[in-house]
Image 1 (cartoon, one colour):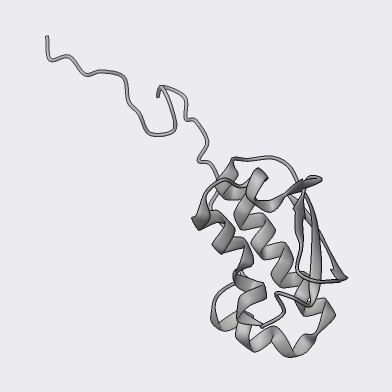
Image 2 (tube, one colour; image 1 turned 180 degrees about the vertical axis):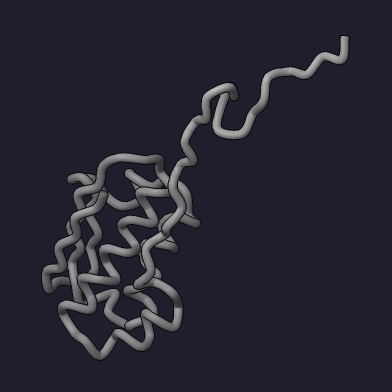
Length: 115
């Protein structure tokens, strides 16, 4: 879950009171997070303050990306078409499949023995 605050500034992104590069060490995740800002040409217009928790690093990056996109929409509704075209306003619907009885995990079956 990510809480995003946009404050007018020069483009500094803070995640859990840490610098973006310190919290997300991979360049692909940093690019993913900056996508909504770069597509709308607002990279140097806002400072972004994020509080994120739960899940892994990749899912946290996805949550931050969605939060930034939605915050940009609240700031300026004219960005909707650009963000929607890139699919940045859609939540990732994938959830963990539940474990079924008689199985070891959600789909893993016990070892089969013919004899």
